[in-house]
Length: 193
Image (cartoon, rainbow, N blue to C red; front, side, top):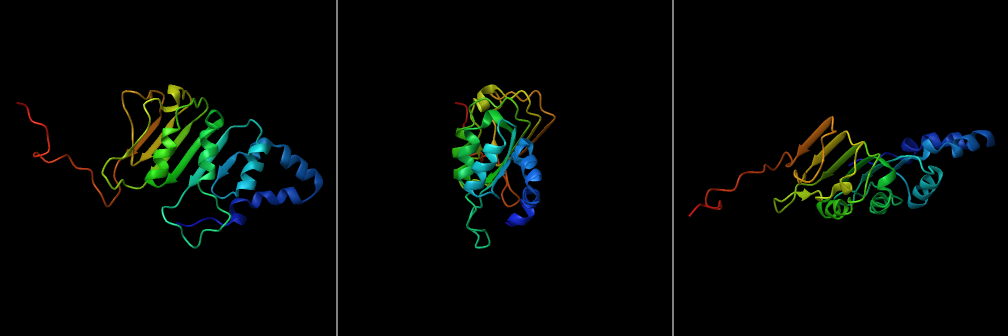
């Protein structure tokens, strides 16, 4: 897992240091401050949220499954998850990659409306107990009219509860390349009496 250096992800912030006029323009343009992700410290995340005002947000959250010594100490992984779940109504794009336990906690909180959400990407590790994480039956309170793209990796859907009729793209993968979900053996299947 390779973390982009802050200079790569936030290089555009240099325009705020050119002169006071450029700083004023950049700080007042809410659309420049809508990308909330793992590349921001907690302090910068709050600053981005404040400067984005009510503009639609894009969340890009990656929580490594094991701490990598190459990951900078300013990276706060779980903090953005809490912010995401309290800002679903402003979320335009959600992309989360994390371990099974964190994903389970996250999806259980995805029950409030997400009226402007267009893209949902959830990726977790293959579950050790062969049961993928499941989205809640009341996903986004059944209010996700703008949702067009869904990609799920090792995350399951309750087909009878979620309304995905407006989707242009749906990609679901319930196994990783090292594991394959198999039907239960005939010995463990229920039989008719």
